[in-house]
Length: 606
Image (tube, rainbow, N blue to C red; front, side, top):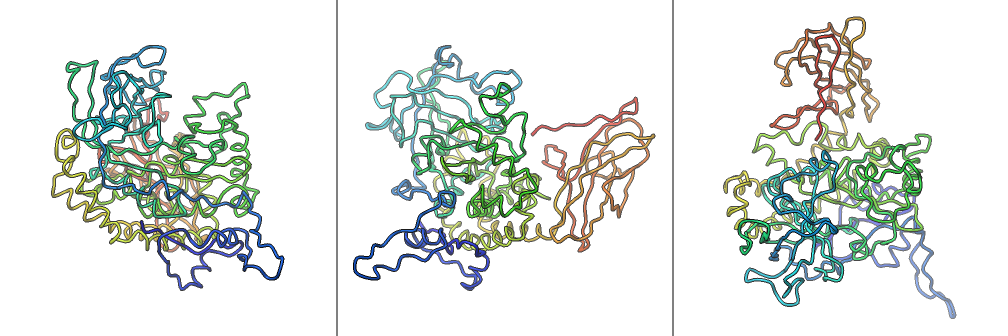
């Protein structure tokens, strides 16, 4: 596969300058950038060995600083992988036993979301399963489960927001000593019901495979059949349609990709790099609460959290210069390539989740690894469906402003210059011709499943819609790039406080907005009875301090919307938004004036 190459990361030299010297042209070829000796030399800031310079001389590699190592995936993992092949899996589910927590029916497994389990205060239900792998004719010899008749796995619903969908995603965990599939015991099958194309996640990971500076995961199209021994037809395999299998990044996955399986690894469930002292604790702390911890960060590796705490202390210490923070605790290359990829593919649900944090032993360096890309390339589909799922501050760098680490990075002119150079380079790699060719292959695989039962019942697209979206995806990189450029000129988003009553007036305050060019800012504040702001009761323009007052209205539901504008005339919404069936309505907060004159807040949980 064609791979993206960039200039070596020269110690103390901006990437932007390195690319400028090369005429700002990105070079693409197969393989890594330079020889191993070249890369080691570039990482150390020294020249590569030039060979023997005299009799008896000994050529040596320069010593490598473990805190300056860039991550590189293992190309051998992907050799022979056919990105448009389909594997058939047969899953027989049955009620297990209480000791293994599998004493549940298939109907129960498919009836609850992760939010239901949280409300009930119980772990996700599991059932016993027999997984067999083969082709459309049946299980095949030499594949996992062949010839077996008793359960070899446990099965549960996986995902967070997606667990609310009618078509569920499944996590199949093969039991120890029951074999592996492609070296994996955990098999994630994702339906991607909200992705009308049903291939966006695979497209993104297959693109990552060609970017040396990013760590990817293996993916595979899977046709799933399920036989429910707990249901009405225990002898029949039901067609569950097409899924995408995505490799699980756990200790096994870490080993497979050449990572340190004894290092720290956290799956980010909802985390913005705040210190969270009440939750992020060491496990020998009497107040440590694992469930509370894992609502933020799911523990997948080493359980010693001292290194995580040290890093978070530094991130939240504004007395530490950003460049020093990044040099001591992060890998700039990793951060920039990860962010550039998400921005250009439009994968906006990455501000506080859908990623992993990884740090190897004996190193202070933390890396961000990609997870869940099914929100990529969704611009045209959102427009087609009239859904405001991406807009306003979610476009460009402002999407990351609410994250403490990313905000500190983006306030640095040096980081922004380097990021801009990487985005330009990656934009050349994510060109329409490459993406169009990949999509042509995926369409041939997906279409026969997408417009057949059961998937066609939940697709939400006609064949003409599908063709229109497929043709439009290659142009979304340029669209996302232009929105990124616009985001650099706008103020950054900010949060609105809960309105309150003071001396008979309604008062609202908000955090000051931030402008990258330090331009003067003014605010427009609007109060209305509806989220469309067709029934405005007060509008105030040109406000220079983050506070507004208005007459206390009569009891009822109200909305306040605030927008910041800089001296150049560029405007930005507040972070807050109101959600309806049509999607998000940005820059506003809903509240209620109670009959006793107090204020009630409308809280939305995504």
